[in-house]
Image 1: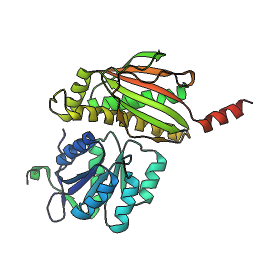
Image 2 (image 1 turned 90 degrees about the horizontal axis):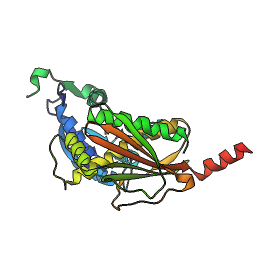
Image 3 (image 1 turned 45 degrees about the vertical axis):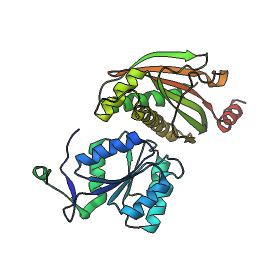
Image 4 (image 1 turned 30 degrees about the vertical axis):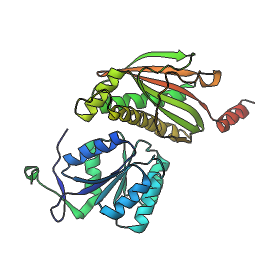
Amino acid sequence: MEQFAPVKRKDGQPVRYLVVDDSVFARKNLARIIETFGGKLIGEAGDGKTAITEYDRLKPDIVLMDITMPQMEGIEAAEKIVQQHPEARIVMVSSVGYQENIVAALQRGARHFVQKPVKPEVLYEVIKYVLGDDAAVASAAGAGD
Amino acid sequence: MKMELIQPFINAADAVLSQMLQSSTTMGNLTMEEEAYRRKGVAAQIWLTGDIEGRIVIDLDEETAIRVASKLAGATLPESDALIRETVCELANQIVGNAICTLNDLGFQFRIHPPVIHTSETGATSSEDTEALVLCFDTESGAVYMNMALRYGKKRSHLAAAASL
């Protein structure tokens, strides 16, 4: 898998991710992609309800959230997280990327939307955009730092 | 089954399989299935409700499922690994999800239900209004079958009937 110049937090630490998807396969796939960005997977959840408790517990820098999930869907979970934590950065990652879903997700607090199957280069650009000034891209030579 | 319902699924399957497996995909046989659906190996089923109703099954024989899951996992998986079934479910999820984006742009609204593993050897027999179409996609990892039995939902059927008066 392609390696990217690491995206780090302003304090030089790796960006911390919470991945929410009911598919173990999808979570593993996202974890592998995050690794190529120099990020750190700090938690996983298989449904929206667990995502809310995990967010409260872990306070990740980025949440990657699926939409279609059992118990509580991703858009509702995103809304509840953002109500409690307005600073939360949630990126929806779903195969059901039609206009209505994207608009609903953004209106209810998500920062961006990435269509599955995930193209790592697309997610990489989205992560940089969503983190904005709170992150810096390290030089490729510093990938092992 | 109308072509406007079928084409988005063909396009989505082609795009998703090509991207996920990082290889070219060609469409092989296309058949109509009149008998009860018979599972080929590891099969994931997704139901749709709304303007379009019915089900899509993505079905891979055991060896192909292992090859595909192992390729995507980056390691050889044992035959019994749960990740193989998970992979087929996610493949189905992404194919159906992408097709639905196209159909939604055409004005169809519906709900996609989470994928479930189809465990019984056979499924429901097709009926006149939900005839099943089976498409085979040849990939470097083996054949991927997509079995579709879809029809217009009641609201759409009434609109179509009214329009024909």
